[in-house]
Length: 485
Image 1 (cartoon, one colour):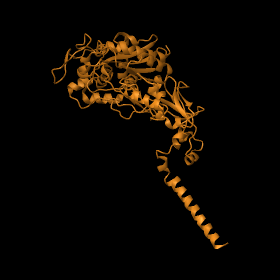
Image 2: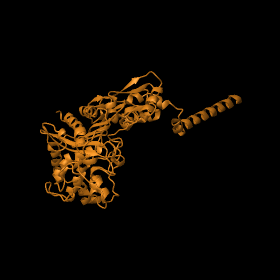
Image 3: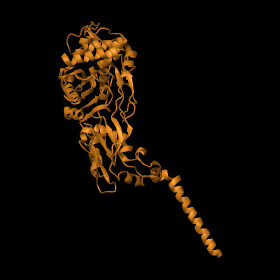
Image 4: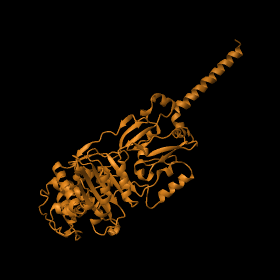
């Protein structure tokens, strides 16, 4: 072979080796740098190149995908979008994902390795596997009853199955259609701006991301603390409770909306929601005892996920006796989400046991094969079983003959607690109407549903009547939907 041919061959081989080395450097060493470059749209194009998996309620999808024929081919669609928005959240080509669309994104988008028949090959090719579905715990009829009951008033509803922790309803009002955020055009940007500047905050998930003063519904926690601590041993014994009650260390006098609260028994005070009795009980139990009880129910827990995060409900531990008295009737700095108060009712209904609430039953392939269950759902004993049994009796009295009679359901045992929470400077805001409850059909051995309802713009002319008048009928309809009544 001629010398110049050998030189040309060697030089060509060197160039080829250099080319392969550079290709390896780009594809292996610097792959992460190029993958993360905003100018690289390959991953985004691939992500929207196939229909997204669905979120299912009662076995039926409440989501879908539409082929736009554009570069980002498939956009998310929603069936009854405002009804399920607090659960699904949105999946937007412009603004990302929220709630279940975010928590289940790996399965819904096809990027979860569990979906891939050959996961190692997918890692090499950076290809997407087939998409999967997220199956929720929601009860469709209960969800619809809660949404219909709020009737666009500001507020929220949370319902739980006490024996399992399954979330049966999660509604926030006013709501919005997440489908208006699915694409990436000017209309989507305009909808985003409109929703974020709306003073009614339709994108706020009030059921799990908004905390409220729970008002008199917190008296369930205070009663549990008093019974567990032995401060009260007899439901019908008279208490040493003046009316009005002077807050310790102050000249402020706490009064009641109801009559007959002076020295009232726990049964009577709970039935007619006597502020003075429960404020004094909280002081008698003490900060430590009240803190232990509140935290057992889930207050001050910043790690609750369902699977998306829940705003922590709070009970202030740095208080004097006057502040403790107000905290014990759900005022001062006591704050709770509707989901938290549903957990309180669920624990009472289920022998003092509280199961961690969850929203995802399982994740599946497109053909329905389960690839992941909802996970472990720990249970904790919140109060003595005997305390829970006596609280069930007290809550049943409220519905049978107290302030919650509008929650009664024929053929079922129903327990409840009304509440009206003052707020604003000098309590000038329109009070929030609360109702927490549970229900058990006469033919059932276990409670089937626990509900919390809060209505922000309720007309509350009298302390406890508002919760019974505005919120109790909504809770009743949700419970009836679950019981099949």
